[in-house]
Length: 208
Image 1 (cartoon, one colour):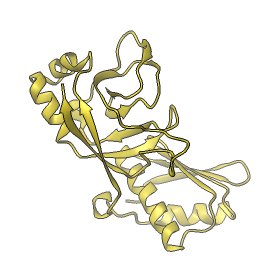
Image 2: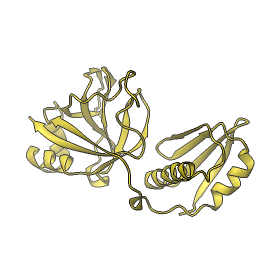
Image 3: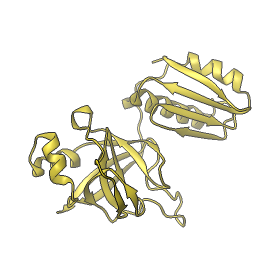
Image 4: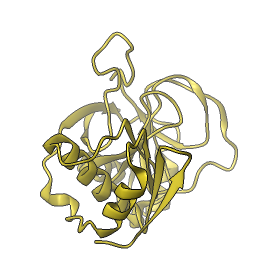
């Protein structure tokens, strides 16, 4: 895949705009692969988002921008990534509503979610929060009409095409389907974030 736009951001930054979330994940994985192989010019940070990848601290941005436009990026499934299992109690207050939106029983909704292989597309919102893709457009759900003022830490939630886990208590409008004891962010741990872009994630059933 080659369709992408590259924009300058300040003196040492580049913003790469992709055509889809899948293309963004593949492009981000290719950046990491080339950096690990030592074939990517000096870049201080690589920050993926939903449809963009920001490169900061680029030594020669004009030259790298020209290179990026010519890359032929392979599809993502060929890449081997780290994997994490997250045990979940499917006891969220919005689980029945999500099942109804999907047109299935609650038991089927749990099975669909726990049998899906997710990938962390990008991180943001709060330290340790990853936006996970994998359910597909058939299972996209809207945010709640009225956001909650406080969502407990460890809440497993859905919104749009994404699944996420709240690393700390915060306001939020995602649909809550379960809870986990997994620690998403621990400053004393290396790395501090349990989930990073590209990581494969499976949610396993830990009860209801």
